[in-house]
Amino acid sequence: MDGMSFEQEWSALKSGADGTDSTAMRLNQATSPDTGPGGGSRMDGSGWLVLERDDLGRVGHAAYTLWRKLRTSADLSGGAGGKGAGATERAASQLKAHSFLLGAELARTAKFWTSQVNTVLQGCAHISDHLDFSKEYQGEEDRKIGAQILGEDGKELPPSQISRLLH
Image (cartoon, rainbow, N blue to C red; front, side, top):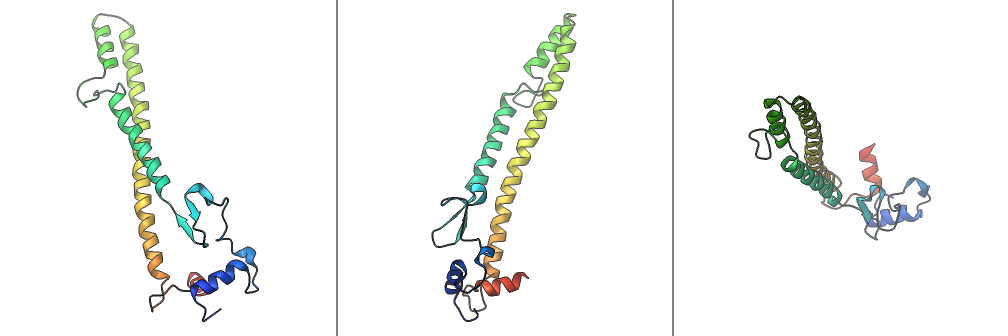
C-alpha cells in the first residue's frame, strides 16, 4: 500500500480490495446511517467520522440551568440573595420563639433540606464544569492528532503509515 494516496488507501481498506480482512476495519460503519456510537458522531457519507460536541453542550447547559434555578428558588439557608435565613428557617425561629415544639423539628428539617439541595447543586456544578472541560480538552486533542497525521509535506498520511505510528 505504500505509495498510495490517503484517499486511495482508505477506499481500498473500506472495500477490502487489498485482500486484508475487512472485518478489522469498521470505521466506515455506524450503528445507524445518521449516528455513530453514543449519538455524538456521524458518518459524512464518504467514510469519515464526524464528532459533534453539541450533546456535551446541551447536557452541560441543562446542568447549569438546573443549578441556577435550584440555587435561586430552593428555600436555603442564606435565602436566594445569599443573606439571612430561608423562609423555613425564619418560620422555625418564630415557632421556637413562641415555645412551639414544632419549631425545633422544622429547623432540623430545614437543615436537612439545605444539605440535600447543596449536594444536588454541587453535582450540577461538577457536571457542567466537567463537560465544559471535556469539550475544550477533546477539541485540543483533536487539533494535536490532526497535526500529527500530516506528513512532512503537509499531506494526509495514508492509514498504513498512521497505523505504524500508533503501534
